[in-house]
Length: 212
Ligand SMILES: *[C@@H]1O[C@H](CO)[C@@H](O)[C@H](O)[C@H]1NC(C)=O
Ligand SMILES: *[C@@H]1O[C@H](CO)[C@@H](O)[C@H](O)[C@H]1NC(C)=O
Ligand SMILES: *[C@@H]1O[C@H](CO)[C@@H](O)[C@H](O)[C@H]1NC(C)=O
Ligand SMILES: *[C@@H]1O[C@H](CO)[C@@H](O)[C@H](O)[C@H]1NC(C)=O
Ligand SMILES: *[C@@H]1O[C@H](CO)[C@@H](O)[C@H](O)[C@H]1NC(C)=O
Ligand SMILES: *[C@@H]1O[C@H](CO)[C@@H](O)[C@H](O)[C@H]1NC(C)=O
Ligand SMILES: *[C@@H]1O[C@H](CO)[C@@H](O)[C@H](O)[C@H]1NC(C)=O
Image (cartoon, rainbow, N blue to C red):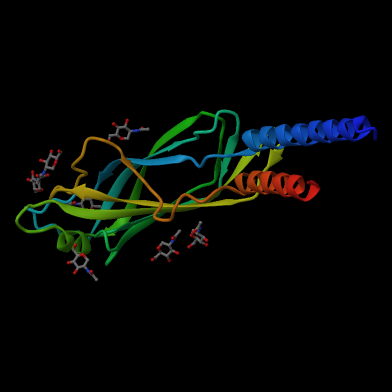
C-alpha cells in the first residue's frame, strides 16, 4: 500500500496556511476599509427684501454646513472644501462659492459651522424665484478630497463630489426644516483599501484554484 499520510499532512498544512492568509486579509480589509464623511446643509438663506427697491446690487448668502466623520476609528483630513451654489437644479446660473479651509476631524466627530458669502448678485437671485411665489430649487455642490488617518498612517486622497437640490421660497430661505443631505451622483465608489481587500481575496482564491 502506498503511504498517503505524508501527502495528507502537507495538504492540511497548506489548508491551514491558506486559511490563516484568508483570515489575515479579511481582518486587514475590515480594518482598512473607510467610509466617506456625511455632508449636510442645515441652513440656506439669502436675505432679499423684494418689497423694498434696494439700491444695493448685492446681497449675502448664509449657509450652515454639517460634516460627520462616520468612521469608528479613523480620523479624516479634509482638503479645502469647495462649496458652489447655483440658481437651479440644472446649474444654469452661478450664484456664489466658498472655500472652507482644510481641517482635521477625529473619529466619530461632527462639525457644524455657519458661513456667509458676501457680494451675491441680487438680480440673478431675484430672476430665479418664480413671481407667483411657488417654490423654486436652488443647487449646492461640494467638492473636496479627504485622507483617512489609520493609526499613524495617512491614506491616499479620496475624491468627494456631492450635491443636492434645495427647495426655497421667495424669502429666499430653505423650505424644509430638515437638513439636506448632499449626495454623490456617481455610484458609490469603493475606496482604495476596499479595492485592495477585494484584490487580496481574489489573489487567494486564484492561488487556491491553481494549487488544486
Ligand atoms: C424691506 O425694507 C423696507 C425698507 O427698509 C422695510 O420697511 C421692510 O420692513 C423690509 N421688509 C422685510 C421683510 O425685511
Ligand atoms: C445695503 O448695503 C449696506 C452696506 O452693505 C447695508 O448697510 C444696508 O443695510 C443695505 N441695505 C439693504 C436695504 O439691504
Ligand atoms: C434650467 O431650469 C430652469 C428653472 O428650473 C429653466 O427655466 C431652464 O430652462 C433650465 N435650463 C435648461 C438648460 O434646462
Ligand atoms: C469661485 O468663483 C470664482 C468666480 O466665478 C472663481 O474665479 C473661483 O475660482 C471660484 N472658486 C472656487 C473655490 O471654486
Ligand atoms: C448658525 O446660525 C443659526 C441661525 O441662523 C443658528 O441657529 C445656529 O446655531 C448657528 N450654528 C452655529 C454652529 O453657530
Ligand atoms: C477647489 O477650487 C480651487 C480653485 O478654483 C481648485 O484649484 C481646486 O482644484 C478645487 N478643488 C476641488 C476638490 O475641486
Ligand atoms: C418662507 O419660509 C419661511 C420659513 O419657513 C417663512 O418664515 C417665510 O415667511 C416664507 N416666505 C414666503 C415668501 O413664503
